Image 1 (cartoon, rainbow, N blue to C red):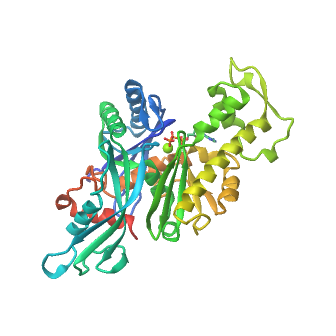
Image 2 (image 1 turned 135 degrees about the vertical axis):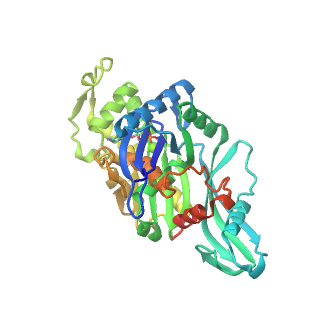
Image 3 (image 1 turned 30 degrees about the vertical axis):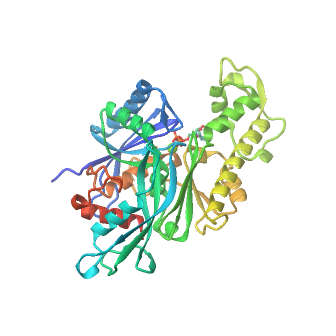
Length: 412
Ligand SMILES: Nc1ncnc2c1ncn2[C@@H]1O[C@H](COP(=O)(O)OP(=O)(O)OP(=O)(O)O)[C@@H](O)[C@H]1O
Ligand SMILES: [Mg+2]
C-alpha cells in the first residue's frame, strides 16, 4: 500500500513555537495527528527575529520534539507567521475576457487576482496572501466562483495580507537553517480560523480573536469568505507586564502568578486574599493582593476587547455577527475572559477548540493549538504536496486543479 504523505506545520509565536505532524487526509477522512512539539520561542519578539542563533535553536527543538513523538523526520512545513508587522487592505482587480466564446476560465481568475495585486506597495512589504472576497462579471456582482460563466469584464474584490519583507525573510532563513523547507506561509490568524470555524459560522458572520503573547489578531468572515483581518498590538505579554509594574514583581513571577491565579473577574475575589510571591520566586519575597492582580488583568483584557470592538466597528459589524466571536490563543484560557468579552462586545462568545482531526488529541485540545492545527488542515487540502504558493506567485498553468480547490475552499 502506498505510504500516506505527511504534513507538518510550524506556528512561530512570540511565546511558543509549536509543531504538529499528521498523515494527510485521504479521501473524506480528516488528518491524523501523530506528533506534536513545543518549545519556548527564544530569539523572537512580536513576530520578528531578534537573535538568529536562539531562534534557530528554538525552531529546531520544537521540530525535534514533534519528530520524536511521530517517529518520522520532518522535511517541510506549512509556516504560520504572526506579528505587528502584518497588515491588510482591500483591493480591486479588473480584466477583459477576450477569448472565443467569452467563457471565463481558471486562468482568468489568476489574471484578475494578479491585477488586484497591482497596487503600489512599499519595497519592504511582501504580499503573503490575496484572498478573493467576491467576483463581478460585467454588472453582475456577488459572484462566488465565475469559472464557466460568460462575460466580457471580470472584476474581483480581494483582501490582501502583507508582511514586512525583512521580517518574513529572517524567519524563512531561520526555518531553512533549522533544516526544513517551507511549503507555504500563512498568516497565523487565518490558519487558526481554519481549525475552529465551521462553514456555517463563516457563512453567517463570525470573528476569530486570537489572544497570543505579543498581540491579538482578529479575522472576520461573512458569506463564506474573509471580510477583514487586523492585528492589535496588545496581548498576554502586556497583561504580564502590567502585573509586574503594578505589583512590583519580576516579569517571571508576574507570568507565574497570572497563570496560577489570574482571572478577569475581580468581583469573585475577596479583598483579603493574598499571594505569597516567595512560593514562585527566590527574589520576589513580598505578599501581594490577589484582588489587585485580577483588577489589573481585567483592565487589560477590557482594553483588548474594546480594541476588537473598534476593529469590528470599522467594518460596521460591531455587535452584528450572528455566529459571534471565537476566542483562540493561550490568552483565551484566562478565566472570565468569555464573560468580559460577551459584555464588552455584546456578542455570543466561545472558546475555539481545534476540530476536524484525529490522533493525539489530549495535548492539542487547546485553543493555543488552533494555528498549528489550522495549518495542517490548510496543507491537507493539497495532500501534503509542496506548492509554495498563495496566489502571490502562483503558476496557474502548473496548478489549475489545486488553485481551483484553493479558491473554492475560501468561497462557499
Ligand atoms: N492558562 C492561561 N491563562 C491565561 N493566559 C495564558 C495561559 N497560558 C498562557 N497564557 C498567556 O498566553 C500568552 C501566549 O499565548 P500563545 O501561546 O497563544 O502565544 P504565541 O502563539 O506564542 O504568540 P503570538 O500568537 O502572539 O505570536 C502568554 O502571554 C501567556 O501568558
Ligand atoms: Mg499564536
